[in-house]
Length: 244
Image 1 (cartoon, helix red, strand yellow):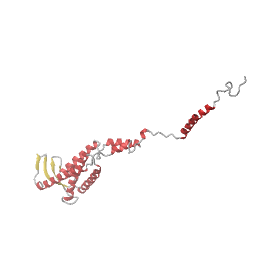
Image 2: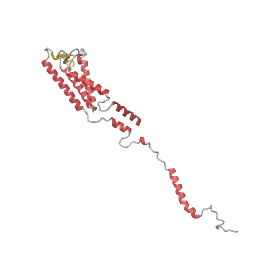
Image 3: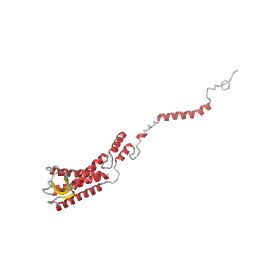
Image 4: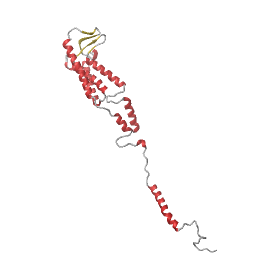
């Protein structure tokens, strides 16, 4: 049987109809266009979540810096009050004993164990270093300067009390070095508290010893004058190094 072109017998099903070509062309074009756009457009790299640092300095480094910031008000006022009280008590006691006890017999306070008697001391605390009056004067001056420098970042109340005792005691004995005989920087310190089998000292020496003991205790506890702790500061430093 002879079939004409386009008849059902001669039509090849694999050949697409014109309508099918027209219908499929937009879809195929869209697919190709989408593939080309995906290929051309760069894909932004995802940043690790742990390295992201929000605005304002947050993150491990920011937290470490914030942890190192001192907390609370400065304690310079407390230091100055304690130092002034220690100095005035020492100064007043020396004026009193020089006026009432010098060149007089010793006064028994606790039998022969503790007595009051005036002794002029050219050395350091408890009568040590009799020939080094000028040296101890310079040391006392240096201690005062160091304490004043520490006071710039003083936020710890216990440290303020300890440094105040040290400062008041150092000022008390330095006043004797500067204004008592035999001369400036060579003045003898007035000692009057005598403990049997121990030494003769004054209230300035007592303030220095108490302040020194408190400083040692605070250091063993890991406390810093700025209110931070040694262990916490080490952890913050390690955290900052890891963040970098």
